[in-house]
Length: 319
Image 1 (cartoon, rainbow, N blue to C red):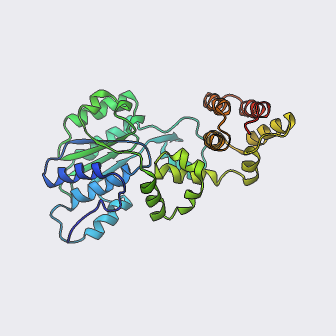
Image 2 (cartoon, helix red, strand yellow):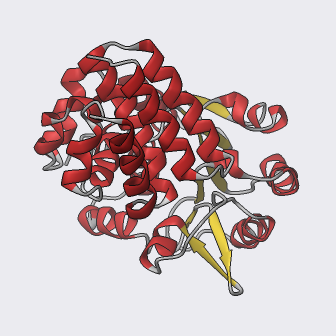
Image 3 (cartoon, rainbow, N blue to C red):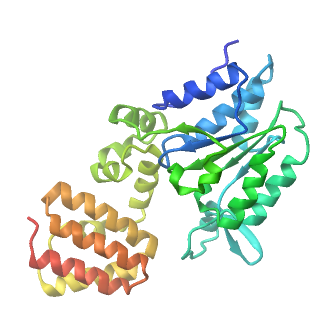
C-alpha cells in the first residue's frame, strides 16, 4: 500500500517535498515553522505531516489513524489554538462564536497553555513514534508565553513541534532560530478554483469581490463568503449605489450602525473597497474606506464613520 497523506493538499508542492523528505530520510527537526497566509493549507499540511510521521512502519489501520487525527482524538497529538478568557474558562474563537459572545480583543495563546504543552511532553508517546504539538496562530503569544515555549524548544525530548505564523517576523527571533521554516504561499487562480470546487464551495467563485479579498486563500474565501451571507441583502444592494441625497447617505449610515455588529462592519469595509474599485476605480473612495477601517478599529462611533463614507461618495460620485 502506498501512503500519500498529502494528496488532499493543493498548491503547496515545496512544503510537501520538504516535509516528505524529512520523514523519508529520518532527518526530523525538533520544531517547524509553517509560515504563510491564513487559509492556504497550513493546518491540513500539519495533519498530513503528522499522519506520515505516525504511520511510519504501519501496515494496517491507516484509515483509522487518518480518522483519529482529523477528529483530534489521538493521544500523541496536542493541538493548541488561541483562546478567550470567559468566566474562568478558555474558549477558542469557534466556541466563543457558538456561545454568541461579544469579543473586542482577539484571542491569544496563554502562558497556561504553554504549561500544558510542557506537561504533555513530559510523558513518552503512547502509540506513535513521537509526540507532536501544533500551535495555530503562534504570533498571538504574549512575551511570557513565548519565553516559556522557548525553554520547551531547547529540550523538546521525543517530540516535534509545529508553529503556524503568517511570517517569521511575527514571532520572537529566538523562536525562529530554533525552528525549521516550511514556506506556504497564496494559491494561483487555478489552484484556488480547484480547492473551492473540491470543498463544495463553487458558489464562492461567482463573487469577484470575495475572491479579491481572499488574495489566493481558499480558507479566507470561504470565511468571507460566509460573512457575506450574514449581511442583509437589501442593505448590500443599497451600499453598492451612490447615495441619492445627503439624507439618503445619513440613512445608510444609520442602517449599518443598527443592523451590523463591529465584525460585520469591518468586513463590509473590505468588501466595499474591492467592490468599489472593480466598479468605479475611484481612489478617493478606497482611501476613505481605509480611514474608516482604522477608525472602527479604534472604536470610533460607527454611525459617524459611515456617515463620512457615504457623504464623501455622494459629494464625489464614483460613477
